[in-house]
Image (cartoon, rainbow, N blue to C red; front, top):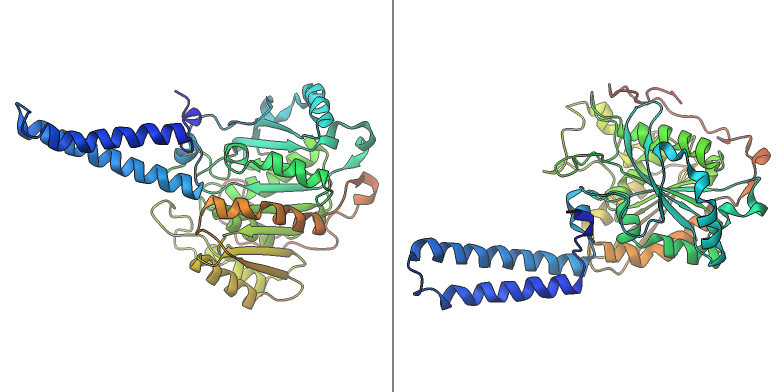
Amino acid sequence: MNLSGIRLDSPVNMIVVVVLTLLAIIAVPWFWDRWKRKRLWRSATILLAVVLLVLTTGMAGNMIGGFFPTVGSLLGTGVYAGQGTDAEAAQNGEDLEKLRDTGVAHAKEGKGTVVHMKVTGRRTKLTRDVTVYLPPQYFDAAYKELRFPAIEWIPNYPSGPEVFTSGYHMPEQLDAAIAKKVLPPTVVVVPDPTGVPKVGHDTECVDEVNGTANDTYLTADLRDWTLQKLGVSANRQAWTIAGWSSGGYCAMNLVTRHPQWYGQAVSVSGYDKAQVDAETEDLFHGRQDINDANNVRINVRLHPSPVQILAISGEKESYESYAIDQIRAAARPPVQFTSWRIRDAGHNMNTFKSQIPDVLAWIGAHTTSPAPAGRQAETTGGVLPWPLPKSGAHGALADTDQ
């Protein structure tokens, strides 16, 4: 069965689980003295009741927090195209032109087109799922010679691109923001930051020491592919990285590591350094230089570049709020660091979703508008890369390599 089709946020599924839980709890005393093999069946009914009670509590917390819409998004398995995509494209989007009729039809309704595909990185050779949002104007003849700005949206761990539609409901938010002209027509690229397996494999978007070059895939590879295949602007100020939770950390970390390619980053409930917990593998293998080079607080102090960062945390998110305060204190010009402290319901997707309209408005105020390619000749604006230490990951960026 497709795990992405099993909803964790369905009221109907919640009711079914609650009813089963109540029946299991009632069954414990009801059959207590009726079983012939009392020790076996008493233990079985108690275990069943406990398991269902834990499941009910978990589903209730998930629905309140809005963490994972499906079992697939929870486990990081299943079909990454997810609910809400409009089409499946060939490897690397080689047949995107076939979407023209669909895109034109959607544009008449003021809607963008969402397509899913597999993308293989030129440097890293990694192949991962990528979902792309093409704005209503993308198939408009009036925009044919223009280059769109881009947002790279990093999903939270352990989610993949499917959460962009079924969890965040971002296409509708983007359609609305573009229609209201608070955001220019923008291409949004949503990669899988982790690959598979997901559970117990939180990569934190870093180039792992002698491991997988996650950072390089998400930056050099995806940017190069997007420029070639989707025809977006090469201007660094046209590129924004954004994300929630681990995706927020990824956004801030990647923009400070690669300021020659990205102008802005938005983090909602993100933090300042890679987490070390049961879900995170040994990313750095004792290499303090690699660890430091992936610490946002250190990067904005030792390698300040003209990037603009918006970091948002909730009043109840003490760890994230502390991390943001530390980054703000460490930031040196020309870094422009802005932070918002908001009322929230804790570290969950509902807090993030409440901020999406304001996040898109902030990006709209800082990114570029679609413009002819000739005006994008100066792609980096004179911003140079800083020397990244060698991680040993296959294909990974190092030193001032571009």
